[in-house]
Amino acid sequence: MKEQTNYNAPCRDHLGKEYANYREMARAYGLSRLQLLNRMYAGMSLEEALTRPLSSLSAVKACRDHLGKEYHSFQAMARAYGLSSVMLSKRLNQYGWDLKKALTTPVEDEPDALRIKCVDHLGNKYRSITALSKAYGFPYAALQRRLRHGWDLEKALTKPVKKKPDKYVDHKGVRYSSMTDLAAAYGMSTPTLINRLKKGWDLEKALTAPLKGRRGNNKEDE
Image 1: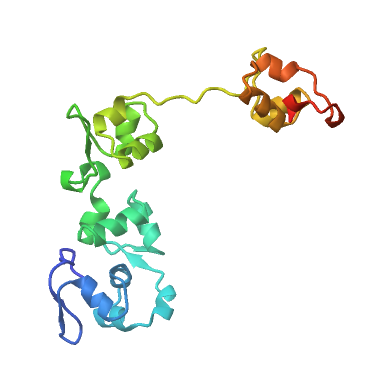
Image 2: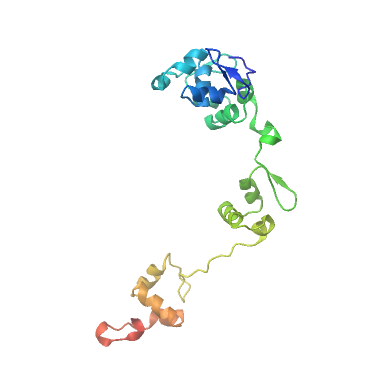
């Protein structure tokens, strides 16, 4: 297979039938484009790559780079060039790069058109939303959530995240991991503590007022 093959250009199979690109040709033979290219990289002829049953795909273990060096798998070849198999597959399939370019182009040297860029409200450019959120010291998940809810980028980046009030600190300043733990520390059930607070009791009274049993019919603790 030639290094400079354009996999997005029209092509012909071993029978001379023409296709719009390698993906269409692979699909006609019940393959994905990646499966077809992996077979060809492993040294198969076009006919063999197209016609060998998928059940025998597992037999294709070897893979060769543009220099002819053999690797035991596609993943091993990618790792040898400092790439993940996902990135290498993306370069070959999505970008349509030839094998040499896909293997040897450093990540930082990818064309700007292939970078996932984000621009903040001040015009500063970032490689990704993750990099943008880190630059602002803003939680990535919170930024994504705000943008999904229709916030403009400036507001999403600059409006502070409201911290939930710490509900599990008693009147002495002792912290508890949950309302249940707080109630249990004072010998009461969680519903009892919640009911007392809903009635407007201050926290100290809610936690320290004696509990009466059911026979005492203390409605305040129902």
